[in-house]
Length: 175
Image (cartoon, rainbow, N blue to C red; front, side, top):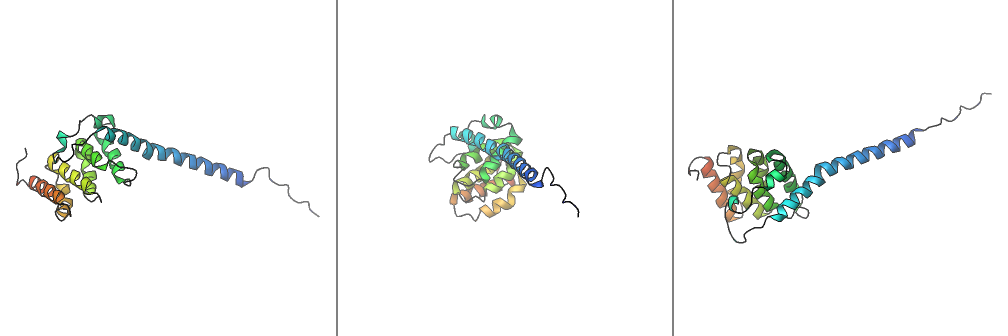
């Protein structure tokens, strides 16, 4: 009769648990670095800006321009603000202000502004249309989204989209 083989000193279960714990920790670190930290940075900056209630003006007259450098420059700020705009309204309560700040990021902001034209909040859509009108008069990438905005339920969004399209198409001189 042969003797049973001795039990191995280590089994796969503890190693699997340690591996899973390490992967979970790395995932949490990534989430904090990629989502939580940028969200907190953007939220603290947009809370500082105060709107002028009842005024419909271009973003230049409302917001100081130091927010973009504080977020890491135009490209980094555009990514962080775009992330903020994709979050649900319960987390990102100042989306309109974020869109106004996004207007100062230059060309990297255009895709995020185009996405903001389809937001559920009319104030965000207004701000996006205004930013495309005032800050990006030659952005042809925005034409399809602006044409859709011409059928928006909000009259101000329709007006800003129309003005932006006129500027892009060269029907209105750039001021």
